[in-house]
Image (cartoon, rainbow over all chains, first blue to last red; front, side):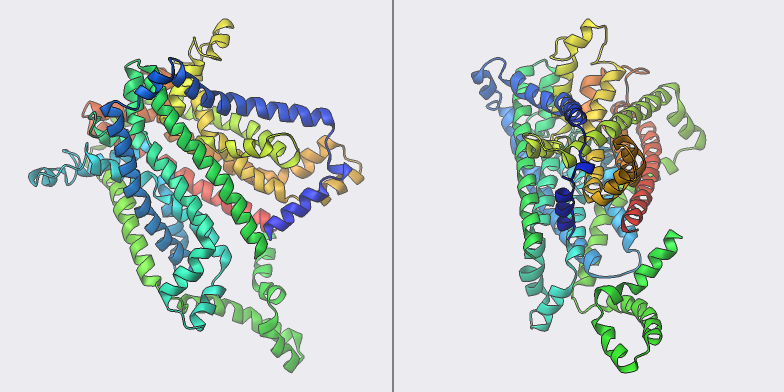
Length: 289
Length: 321
């Protein structure tokens, strides 16, 4: 519905009353492009240029060191754990919030957004305060020889925290806008709860779900501040790709730092491409309904 | 007045949208007033009835959501507040109000504010251009606006540092006119501008798209020039979304760490942001100091989150009115 109105408005705006003079048009376009160029395109171009500055062989060599490979492996591992866990939570929270009325609903919705309001550094800090040597249950963990902070579990937890809202906040409005009618119809026709969820709800929200997942994944692989606090920076063991970039950069090994950075930039570009694709797809879906 | 109107629309909505449940009554009784009153009573009852929805899984999904939320978010956050509860008031004040910490607040808040203002001005222009004009590669550029959401902050940090350092592509021109961009406060503003760039564009864009062209036509036919139309007719409905975008960009900038540390130079009292100071305290095993500063930041962030929520409710209201 909103899409239809937007398109109607777009068509109507071509009347003369809503047209700006050409010089206004082109100077505003110029200002926008200069601003975006300065802050978006130049930095992105710089990553690839700096990475390739000393030739393709140096560029490729940056990925073949054991530390780099360990960092890539750890980044993938963290994402593989964190994204599905937050996906399951996102589905559960969206089902409860979009399909039912209950007291405290808006409070729950606000609390889900909470991690976005917390500085990444503080997101890491709270886990140190809980599980670190001086933390609340740190001494107990030490007694039982369990190391969570400055180890992989800590990195996973910090990543879970910072990527917590992504799937839920994408899904809730999509599910809400679909209403419950189709689910009621499925139940009336004899489907059970799971069948209704898998065959009716999930196909309806698939684009919103996919959208949330790729944003969640991009953040999980790229998180720096939170992971930096809990990682302990042990090379080859608790360094993720962003932390590896920091170490290389601080060692003045710029070519390698930018080479690894270019890999994460490619991830960002793929994320953006998928995002546009999903937006186009979901627009088509609402148009067909 | 606006509020009362909304309420009216709310209760009468089933009439306009889905008249069928009441149609039968209206045919039978032929008394519009009676069924209108009936509906006013019935509609809130229907809302309550929806709580007992025939859909399954309410307890399971709500229970799991609350459990997972507590485990990942609420309990760890509570730990931070518990930690400061163990501090004496004097120690707390000393930790959060020492000159070095105060300097970091000034920089963090000041630079975040400047960056959010820059983003509001240019974000509005970018949103306007993307909605209103046609030019080559528009869709690609539109997609690129979200780059700061997708690009890891550490990557942005080293890229910005490389460009704005004195040998960099842009830094070396700035150096010629005597401006030091990287390793200065200006560097902090640059990084925070990058981080907050998408917020204003993305909050203003949909509102701008939905503005009715009839308004502009009416203004033009009544003799307003283009600038007057913009100032008096187009801009006012954009204020709520503009303010929301501003607040979101500001909130994001306050906590930002990754993109800033590479370009700021991290000099105490001069270019040291508050999140970095938390890490520094932590590395010196000053857990209490780090936690106290974190709690101050958290309280401020939560207040901001609350403000943003209220703002969004307000803009939604403006939207429906």
